[in-house]
Length: 300
Image (cartoon, rainbow, N blue to C red; front, top):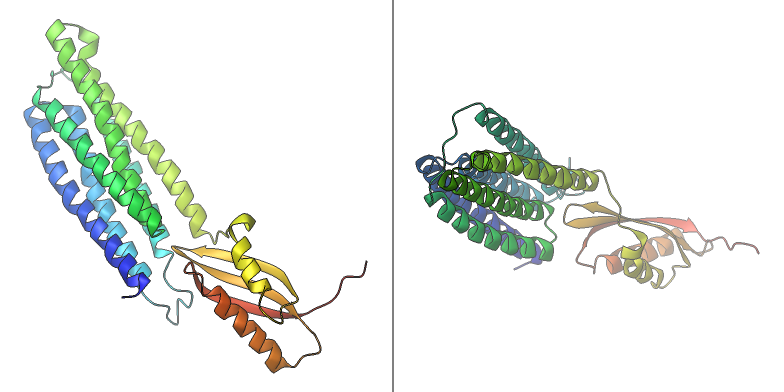
């Protein structure tokens, strides 16, 4: 089985884990949130539900990125993962706004102290979400899946929001037990804090995904080995320019090499072909475009 097929299956499986896990968590937290009268837990359930949509988007993006190059997309569909990551970030912004609006409205309604059952639901959510984050993050890092990495951080944002909900619910329960009025609003405040965390996470992830989608090139220190490999091909007198454009989980290399101006076109083409073959040995490289220049010695 090819490396790309293994990558696709692993990432697809992780996306399905996220979809199933988030559906279960969202249902559990929503039901218990209503039973326990906890706005923070209901907000957390909405966040988990948004994760379901995010995981579906990731699944679609990864599947599209797996498609081979065609006439309209000669460089492949690798950027589909970046697009999927951007969509997930936008979904996070919408979810954050909805939760913030709901939290704001709660300050103008009668306060209801949540029940202890909400605490147990939040603790369970934290444990499951942290395990899902670690699984997806490590897999996304291994297979250089931007969409999966974003989805992993989506799970981590759920962990943070659940911790905030835990503190808020605990404060509200304590306030009701000790008859301390301002602590009773802890549940609503936790819900608002969750919204802020979600918005911040969306901004960070969305900004990085947009940056990668705009033909970002690898930094010079990241291309040293590839550049040296090209320079060591017989017949290459100089590497005039080397650009490795990120295209999702792989890169497209644009390289200009200088060869002896006295050789034939056929010989120059053969050298360029050898350079391409050498660079394609790197698993990160999907395609190479070689331009041949006549070598001109710089006079001192």
